[in-house]
Image (cartoon, rainbow, N blue to C red):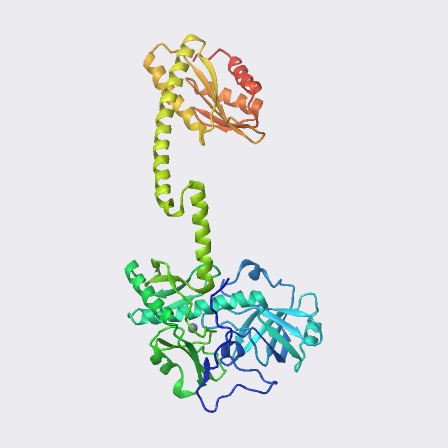
Amino acid sequence: MAVAALPQVTPPTYHRIVSPTLQVPADEKVSVPVGLLACQRDPLLREITTTVVSATVSQAPTPPSNGRKSKKEKAAPAPSEPLIEVILHDTVIFPEGGGQPSDVGLLTCSDGDRVWSVVEAKRHGGHAVHYVRSKDQSADAALRAFMPGTRVGVALGDEGWKRRLDHTCMHTSQHLLSAVLDSRNIPTLSWSVTAWPTPCYVEIPRSMSADELASVQDEANRLVFEGRSVYVEVEELHGANTSDQAKLENGRAVSQVLPADYTGGVKRTVIIEGVDRSLCCGTHMPTIHNLQLFLIPHTESVARASTSTARLYFFAGPRLLHHLGATHAALTRTAGTLSCGPPLVPERVAQVVEERKRAVKRGEDVEAELAGMIARDLVAEVVRGEGKVHRHRTDDAANPLGLLNAISMTFAKEAAARGDAPPYLVVLSSSPSMQTAESTSVVLVFGADEAKVKEVGDMLKTKLNAKGGGKGRWSGKFTGVWREKESKVVDEALASLIGGVSV
Ligand SMILES: [Zn+2]
């Protein structure tokens, strides 16, 4: 995963505290409120050293984080494994919020090189709580390691950073997309960070045409090419600037009010220069430069009991590159199978489908003709003989019983039409050309007398261990390799019929 020309450091102008009295708490004994966390002040910061404020044993496993995690992550932590809830003075691990899932990361204690996994972080009131896996250590050992006042390293680690970079790129792109949609009077009702690597979506009140979507994408990418900067304004939260004003400020309906349980006392506005102002606690790229946006060129309708909305799916950042790579690989593989260049794939696939339709039709025609020939041949044979006949075929058709049925139908018609056919009993069997112990051969028994048909069917069940049944006609399956021996069993069954096949 790579984003070309990713800024190495967040510019100092990114995080702007606009209230004269608001400060990031310097006292290491208190935790920095959510809204002013290191990950929110500097989204490119991957690690810091800080101090433990509190640690407790988690009472309940953390609920799954709305399906945004990979299966592997969902599987962890194991229920038997205690989790420790650690509050730090400050952190680079973002607690979920604003539609953005939680980061994962690592804690390192200063007294050794032991690394602890942070499986999730959540906001409790105004504070970020790290859920730390105690692994093989007892909960007591973990609590000793995280005594209040202990110096610890907190880092995203490689996996945590990849995850964060993806979430950050998708989140900032969502703000940009929603702003462009707002300018066209299409409000964003909600949005979702889906599991990597599927596209994220914004939910909007109506579906959009491909032309409209192309126009929104062009507008968004024009702003991307301009490299608009992104920055954050933070101010103290008080009566005058709570939710009502926030809603007026940007006019967007959803995710624009502070959560009811938020007690951090900070109001945070994310600004894309000249484009958008949104109340948001997420981590955001310092610029939209390089955040090229790709919209899936059709919206998906979502019908609910009383309303219908539409989802607009999008890619940006590392997820867009992954999508391009995966799509290209699939196209290249298909082109290889078809022995043509990738641009010719749609044409070649259409041709193959058309050829297949014709081949299927021809196969059906030839099969009908073959069924007729075999049926007439069999009728001639019963007229010549005693009325009992067995015919075995080799056939690799997906449904070999289909041909046997077609033969039986034509046989009945031909026999009736001739007038000189004696009472008959016919056994048809069919095996694939390459047989193993697991191969299936099919058997069809039909005749003038239902009782005789059943008698032969029952004999095949007993002597061949075939499975089957049916009224009037008996069809069954034989598992294994069909050899001369099996054909002989059928012949003997026919020969043993008491009184021949006369009715
Ligand atoms: Zn946001």
